Image 1 (cartoon, one colour):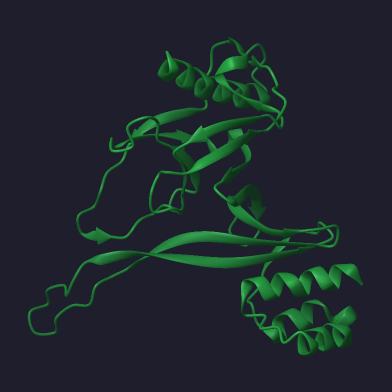
Image 2: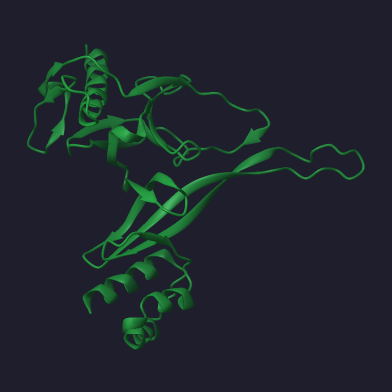
Amino acid sequence: MKKIMTLLILVAFCLNALGQRGNSGRAFNVGQGSNGLGSSNNFLSIRAGNSGKWVKQTKNEELTGSVYLFDDWNNRGVIYSNDGKGYKLDGLNLNLELNRLEAKFEDKSKNSVYAFDPESVKKATIGNKVVKRIRLSDKEGEFFLEELSINDKVGFYKLYSVSIKYARLNPMTQKKMGNNQYIKEETYYIEFNGRGLEAIELKKSKILNKLKDKKEKVKKFIKENKLNVKEENDFIKLLNYYSSL
């Protein structure tokens, strides 16, 4: 019974998202608990529709590493649909190669996952991370970015991605010296007063150029607090200070 109810909640979430995208008559009701999160105890009704799919995980034996943000699937999370309702899930992860949320249920050793249609998700929490789907002009599309620091003046985000590092070839035999591997990469984005995100390097010269309206105060704050803005936490401290001016 518990397995059936868990699956029903998953289907319900997908149906709701589809209804939000303009499919009249395709909706569902989920009651709200004291924490505002849907659960098997307050599931009420479902109508036809779908906005996700089960997919098989395939492994390329010539590639090492992972395309997922987390190395395992022991992650509790909450997915928020476009209407703001939240649904608690275990086994949640972010596929960095396909930029979509995926979940494993019950037996995590199986090679099937449920892949959510990205358009059905507004944001999600996975462990202690909050990821939000945001449009990026430099990449021509919407991507899940981690929210690092948000206030009225400045938003600071991180995009995770993967690339393939190809193994070197032996110059004599022309055979690969090892396996190709996935490399996880990070790109930081900053947003001022809701004017859209732009990529930024964690460098003192770069941030001083962005905060030039308070440049002298910012420089003094960096010096007095011995901040290393190449470090993510120090960079956030600096942004919080700037926002307080």
